[in-house]
Length: 231
Image (cartoon, rainbow, N blue to C red; front, side):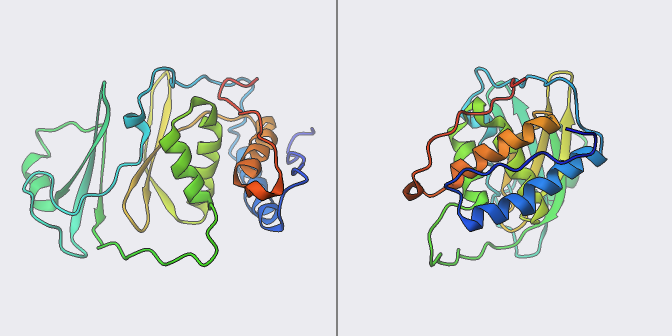
């Protein structure tokens, strides 16, 4: 592959038109982003997933009341979200602005940010039930399998492009880089490990995403998982 060239697209024979559209609209821009931002690396970094508990990476739901005072949030109220990390995983606290002013000098959260609380609307019925990009990401986070670390990262980037998720923080150490996203509508927190993908891995990851999203009736066979230590 020449420098600056996007990876070849080789969708499975079972791919539906909708999945092919997803491929062309999402993976090629992602490849171009990797080229332009020079994030292409010659070697892959392993992520610290061995022995990680499900509770560490699962989606953190926004609270409807202050975790410190137990007072219910009003619609449109300014709130602060705090993430704390210990050996058991991540713990989320949503607190009022008044509570934040009282404790901000005495706490050291892993990450925190300010946002507006909005009462969540009931979900609209889906006339054609199918697994969307968001639903697939939720399922893979719940399963918490280390071989899906690459797919979870790519799905999060896709949802960020669609403005479904917004990145609110990044935490990086010598061992790992963690991206923290907040759901634009529900306020849920998605904690995603950046596997530091190489450009030549995108073709394999897009194959896995397409197969994971393909309806069972298409007869698609299971793809071999693309793990973070793929070389």
